Image (cartoon, rainbow, N blue to C red; front, top):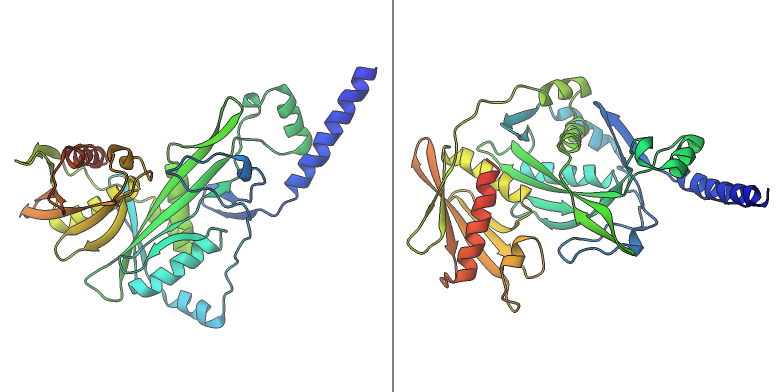
Length: 353
């Protein structure tokens, strides 16, 4: 009896604590088939974040969008938000100038509680911080006690997952039209002995697509029409890429695409790989990328502690249907580190095709 009494006390103590957590405000917006719940986390302070990842937000103060009459009129003027799709890639073609789309896109993510961690309007790129998403797992994965609590509280438990988004806005030949690319990166909590760590996890493609859909609706698209557009058929396969070596030992990537298509693909691949783009010049077909020590996976290939490395990726059109991607070491050192880095980078880019 005494044991049962203690168990009852423990159960109701957990129940009270859990109920207080359930009562926290959670941002819930449901469009399509997936509900996205971003919420503050009380436990983030105790987690150890790897040095190449950004610590998730801990305050969880949601910044709501305040829509004035002017804002609503602006939304109603957006007559066309198209979904472009090529193999596994989706992006938006929006009837707004890059400047207008830049402001609205940032406001969209702020409405979900994200803070803008890094932005460069000159190249049309911004990144949010990490924000925890409410996760749910089947009862059978929880163990007997947590499964019982789950049923009692009518809620589900899961290991924490935090998401961040990278948005790149590209101009088109039409000054009142822009392309928008959205990329999701996620980290999940794991345990290592007594420590709790955040580690990169496989991207949830369904969630990324859902956020793109919600952005379409935010910009003024009808929700049902947006769903139909985003579920449109995939374009046919355009071939495969080939890798070669230059005289300096750097890789050279050959894409079965014209220069404009190659520009889209390369920008998307760099987003997917979380490569730091410091500048770009679409006219010359150049991306300038930066490798900072202790930041990101590819930085582990650079052993030089004192300096930040900057490289150039140049697109050169061989024909109307073939484009080469060339790696340029701007300092012309062409040392073993640069060769190793470029080889790994181009292998990863090729794998994204």
